[in-house]
Each structure stands twice: as structure tokens, then as C-alpha cells.
Image (cartoon, rainbow, N blue to C red; front, side, top):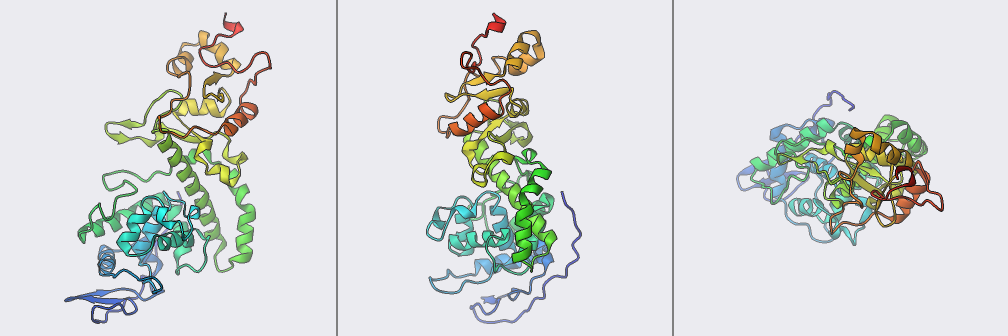
Length: 387
């Protein structure tokens, strides 16, 4: 993880009482005066190192908002709102939705829109500001995004501070769910990162970084590099989460799950591409039908071509592995039948992996491609070598 010191000065706040109307960031509700920053007055520290008092103040301003009618100007995002929109991007790909389909955006976009009294399209637009795909975002937002997404400990800390302040202001989990599942002692873990190779990611981003340097000269190169790298890692995280969910958080080869003692242990399972990330297009990299959930042993065996999957989803051995099984008891315990199943273990509701990706794996990765006479032998079918 990339660490850094926070030395930015906090934004300057104003405090001027007015009557129950919003006027450039000031709001008075009843006898309570709420001080809110003017547009552009927030400093980087208001995002990265907010005080509890500042966060509670922001939540009071949010609770006092009135719904904005169509055509009216919306109030500016407060820092905690920006950070939660960034956190939501770990779960939702904003690029899949337009203004007419924003109401279909997944959890937690609709919850955040209701809480902040904004249309869902506004939350999605902020997410686009934060990854740089939409310009004209607020001051500091690209830097905030680059720093927080490259430091999961920082992101977790600020997320939990924001939720604690919300609970202190009476905002329960029904209105603001713990969508990153951290309030009860969990840890923020970007899944699927073990598949990414730093040199491959850097090579893939070279042209994009150069384009940003020409077109976004207001953004420092260091921020650009961090932001684009984080975008790749977040995309991989969303892909892996979708694959794990689709397969019921169980290894498709042996059925092993990752929940022990009521807690999910994320490192027990891996969600990897069938057609590897380095060989896939941008669309294929995010397609959950190009992924399999596996325990580490069976994941490595599949990635290195010792196992493959036929069109009917039957699991097949490479010749070398099949010949070694009768002579190697530990190997047989890992790859025999059981623990491996005859076919991929999938929930009844699961989407099946795309046969095009499986075909690519059989021809490009499988270490013992079948001859026309031999064919791919499913597990359990005897070969001549073993008879």
C-alpha cells in the first residue's frame, strides 16, 4: 500500500445565521446553526482526515436538506458525501448506467440517493468525477480518489468515521447500510488483486497516461498514474466480487466455501479470469462470465493448464496430472475424485461461464491439448495409460 502524510490545511468555515433556507452553505434549523463550507473552501484534510465534529455537522446539513425539484440547482456535495460515493464505486460500475437508467443502478446507489435527497444520476455522476471519466468535478476530488483508492487502510478509516458520525446523528442502517461490511469488525479487502501483475498493468496504461498528460494538464502525472492504476484494481475487484457472488462463494471445482465461524475468510477463495486479464479486452476483463471461483490449489492448477473445463462443464485433467495421480497420494487428495467433482459445482441460479472463454482456455492454456482420437478426458474416465 502507498502511505502518505496529511499536512493540508483544513478548509475555512463561515458561520452566519439565516432562516431555514440554504444560502451558500449556511443553514439554520430551529435553534441550531449549522456551519457548512462554501464551494471550493474545503481542504484536502476535510476528505482524508475529517474530525468527528465536522462529520456530524455535515450529516446535520444533509438531514436538513429539502428534495430538489426537477430543473433546480442541487446543493454541493459535502466531503463525506464525496467519500461515500467513492466507496460505492467499489461495488457499482457507473459507466453501465446513463441518466435514463440510473434508477436501475445497484446497491448502494439508491440508498445514497434517497439519503442525500438527490437523483441516482447525481451519485453516478460524482463517481464518474472521481475516476476522471467525467471532468468538472469538485476541487481536490481526483487527488482524494487517487490517494484513498491506493490506500485501503485510509479508505476504511474515513468510511468508518463517516458511519460513526451518521449513527451519532440518528441515521440507522436502514437509511445508510454498512455497504462495505466493515462496522462489525471486517477489513477492507480488494478481491482478485493477486491476478494482476504490476508490469502488465503499467504496460497497459502507458498510452492512457500519455493521453491524460496531453489532455488533462491540470492533473499532476503522479495523481494520474495513481488514479488510473486504482481504476484497474477497482474494476478487477468488482469483477471478482461478481464472480464470487455468482458461484455462491464456493470453489467450482471442489465446493469448498470461505465462511468459517460465521465470518467470511476472503483469502480462501480466488476469482480469476478464464481468459487471463493480460489477454482480454477491456470488456472481457469485466465480464463475470469470464471468471471462475476456486480455492488457491485448484485456481493455480486451472491457470497453469493442469485442469480445464469442457463445453458441458465437465472437469478434465492434463495428461501429466492424470498419470501422476495413482503414484502420488498427497496429489490424489488434492485432485482426485473426491475432492474434485465430475462437473463444475454451480448454484442453480448461477450464470454459466461463457463457452467462448472456456474454449480459449482449452486451446491456449491447457498443457495437453487432445488429439482428434483422444479427446479431452473428463475426470473419472480412464485413460489407456492407467488401464
